[in-house]
Image (cartoon, rainbow, N blue to C red; front, side, top):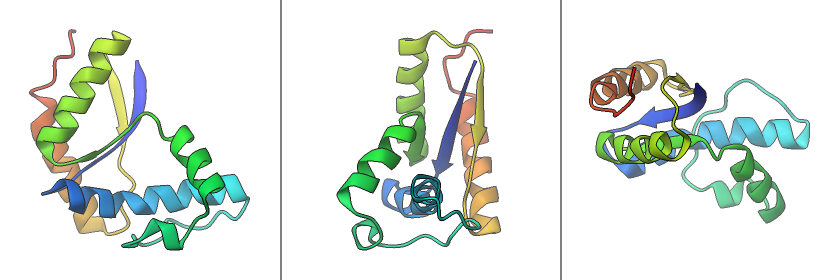
Length: 117
């Protein structure tokens, strides 16, 4: 079993934009400045420095953000590499409607994953 952050969007770009909320949330963990889930931003480079960026990205190695096709491909690869047969996800999206949309899109994708039961 594994756990992962998953955000599915209409496009890779939109999902990556939504994912900046997760990046900022983990930045708060790294810097000790935790706060409620912040809204997404268009440019993370204006929010963090290189050292914080590397630390956050290291913590989020098991995260998948993108279109349905991209997320499916990356999770399928993750499943092949790890041999897991169960995946728990979290979807931290600032906007509730966008969160529900992401979960619905992942639900559709989930049925196409190669997890063996």
